[in-house]
Amino acid sequence: MIESGIRDFAMAKRKAAQHHGVEQSRKLPGNEEIEQELIEYQRLFHSNTQEERLRQLRQTALKAMTMLEEFKPALVGPILNGSADENTPVYLHLFAETAEQVLIFLLQQHIPFEQGERTVHMAKNVTLHYPKFSFVAGDTAIELTVFPLDGPRQPPLSPVDGKPMKRAKRRQLEAILGKGDEGAG
Image 1: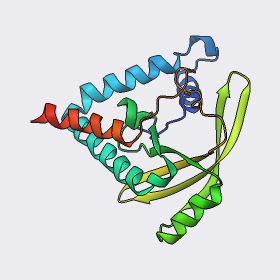
Image 2: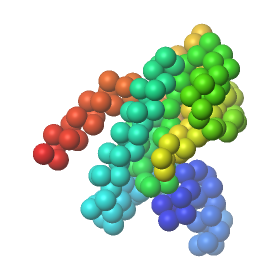
Image 3: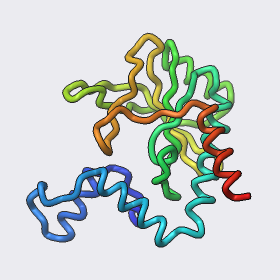
Image 4: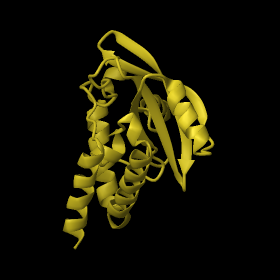
């Protein structure tokens, strides 16, 4: 996953199974096990750069969250949980009355973006589709998923463990960055 820049666990499992000639999916590791191994791999082989790269990604996330403050952004995914690598986008959940509000904001800021759709799992058999906007800030991809203000307030289920995704608001991310800076000094 790290070498190929793949963030989709199912795709990575299929590719690895095909490469190793494994056909039965029950022999494949679970997503949580894979994520722990990714973190361990980074600790072993990228220890001299991983902490700084993660700090940079979190700072980029914080800048994006500050810019998008009116949409109550929340950071989710590998940058929050610490498993990010150099190919990991900043994943932000935004909340707006309409996706058009975010679109207009990006246009007014002269930010070139791509529009799409994010499929999220809200419960075991509940899948919803939300608008997604993607752009690049410096050398970091930013992906915004826009949730309705009056929609479900619980976070979607994590593709890693099937539990509600952890979300961090701006102040929580500032605290995480502050702890990292204290440890470095």
